[in-house]
Image (tube, rainbow, N blue to C red; front, side, top):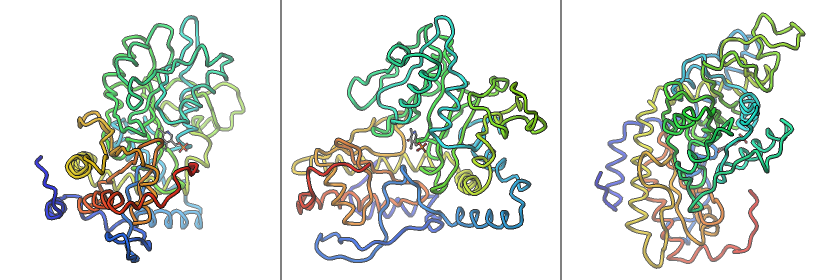
Amino acid sequence: MEFKPGVDFAKKLDKEDPLSSYKKRFYIPEMESLNMDGKTKSVKPIIYMDGNSLGLASKDVEEEIKAEFERWKNLSTRRSGIDKKAAEYQAKLVGAEPDEVIVTGGASINLHALVSTFYKPKGKRTKIIGDELNFSSDLYALAGEVRLKGRDPEKDLIVVKSRDGRTIAEEDIIAAMSDEVSVCHLPSVYFVSGQLLDIKRLTKAAHDKGVIIGYDCCHSVGVIPHKFHEWGVDYALWCNYKYMNGSTGAIAGLYVHRSHFKETPGLPTWWGNSPGNRFDFKAEWTPTGNAASWHLGSNLSIGFGVSPVYASSKMIVDAGLDKIREKSLKATDYMMFLIDELLSKKPYNYSVGNPREAEKRGGHVACEHVEARRICEALTARGVLPDFRPPTTIRLSPIPLYTTYQEIWEVIQHLKAVIDNKEYMKFDANKKESY
Ligand SMILES: *Cc1c(COP(=O)(O)O)cnc(C)c1O
């Protein structure tokens, strides 16, 4: 698509946006912030560019949390079936069969629950593949799981290195898949650079080598369609508070391919045992014959953290994940166009740090600048909320259901103004990160 740099073009894109009616279902907080002139202040709605860390609150989720409170009051939570409905919607979002997905636990706990199930060092196959750019929790968990099996991460954890410090070459992951590898664990989208891996290709490569493969999809579920079942992905996990907008207490998601339904989970609990056997008091496990075996107790599988996941998943399924991905790609394309066009030359010196190809990028733009941290503070003073990832990345995430093209255009004007007015220089260059 041919973009134009003026605000009129942004307004035209908003008029043509088939998802524009969703914005009014979200709460956009107001904040006293600097105006475009950099001098006067006013109270105005923020421009939220951090929905890939914590999605905004919606009225749909609010209603469902209230409804759950009613269900608690009249003790109908367990018979409401809302947990199963939530999982069915989530299964649609990841391309799984309905009984291959459950809502339980948290992303990091589910990571342990799944890797502890599938990592079974035996004979020569004793290793796990991870990589150096995945989210920190993943590497901690992989090393922990290796130690729990009485082994040494120095020997049994293969960490695939990045060639450029930003992305991981798929060939390097495939090259690491030897007959000494038990499990390969990867992200779908890298949280800093936004690189999207080719899940279909990597899954096939792993299976050709007899390797189990799983994915942490915290940065893709809700914004990128997947086909886990069709691709034969062995397991996956994701959180529901980022692109899913499922609330601060949202319970996470987990997928297990049906070919593994007879496995005993690594972290078995009473609620995961098949319903007729929950009080058997026996050490051996009775598989439920579906992904429900992986439930992490009852209280992280039903109730307040699960019902908002139902509401937010329903909203995304109803809006259409294909339409969401289409808008996400168009919005990030437009943002990259404006960065190239208006901000890439002196004195601005911004650049695009994510892969450019549609099939290789996720839902955010990694905007690079040597002064990224101070620029993020200057943007926040202007009511634009980005996300800083050290050392030089300003993460900007247009969320298809609530970000307008005009807001993207305005973000670019703010990025320009903080350099024009030297506003970022007011902030301490040596401040330590608190996150
Ligand atoms: C956000 C994120 C997590 C977060 O894990 P929690 O257990 O929810 O804190 C894990 N993995 C990835 C890739 C993430 O982006």
